[in-house]
Amino acid sequence: MIDSRLCEMAAPSRRALLSGAGALFAWAHAPRIASAAGARDPRFVVIILRGALDGLSAVGPVGDPDYAGLHGDIALSLSGPDAARPLDSFFALNPGMPTFHRLFGARQAAIVHAVATPYRERSHFDGQDVLESGLPGVGRATSGWLNRALAALPSGQPVRSRGGLGVGIATPLVLRGPAPVVGWAPQALQPAGEDLGRRMLDLYRHTDPALAEALARGLDIDKLASREMNGEKGVRGGMDSVPGMAQAARGAARLLAAPDGPRVAALAFDGWDTHANEGGPRGRLAQLLSGLDGAFGEFEKGLGDKWRDTFIVAVTEFGRTARINGTTGTDHGTGTVAFLAGGAVAGGRVIADWPGLRNEQLWQNRDLRPTTDLRAVLKGALADHLGLSATALSGGVFPDSSAVKPMAGLVV
Image (cartoon, rainbow, N blue to C red; front, side, top):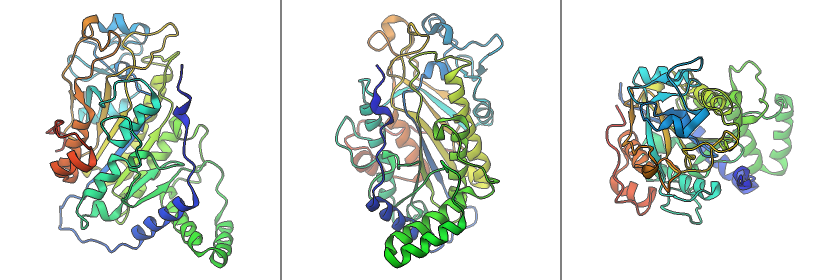
């Protein structure tokens, strides 16, 4: 049964709107911080793939003799009209991701396979909670690990002083917390026009100055995110569609590239719950992967010369079953993949302690067995890219995780 809570989203309150406006005001009016020529000015982006990504159809272990038999009609192959894109002698990439494959060849993208959070059950709601909160288990999370990472940085660092960017109707949990965050969402409807905006501002300045300030800052950030989009409207399907993913990434990239813009961002793309008619090299999953691929391309293009100091990680709450089901899909599983992309990524490799796919090697005789803790990947990126200390990472950012060591060598 598909967990209906997957699509639940919290409606932003007036209090949250005003809080976000305060963060945006601080961002817009923060003093410019001079940096030495050639100094790094890192960007860090987290993309949450909600619904549980089938890692075996995204990055196929074509060199494993048990792969094709288990994954059946949706297994990737190096031959045929929909041939997968080779990554090395063992793994191949879904053909729906040509941009990521190019970045991989340029050593600006990497993959971590057989990875998972500490969560071992199969509820979307709980799995996403653990993924985004950074807690070792299910609990009442009020903040996310990315926000706590921002708050743990020294106050003078540009990454912290510029704050975070939450993309979507509601800020993803991973970026909620004490550090300042501004929100932006692609247009869902035809823009109302500047004249209406001015009249609303005039009205609220006389009746509710705080809300007027929020509206003014929101209009400013939307104008910056949407500039040069040639009047592009909101797309059908929103951020869950292929053009919607691209539009969200395009706007986020413009904000991250701004000299005084945020340095950290979080986006969430829904729709990865492929119980039926998943498809492998073509079909629903390949279409979703092409949307993610397009988002990577938009970040590369929109960030310009800031791309070289950018680290993007795309993660999901858990994987899917190694065996296909009776509806040519896959059910909730465990081990999966994480995609890394950006000029700051030490790429061109698939990082995997491969567990094998024989029956006795599967997790609970059904799933890809996870051999890498996702927190090790995230810790390694945060330590080497943003400079967080081991104490901060194992304490406030990922509580009770001292046994999980940061993965080294992810950042150039």
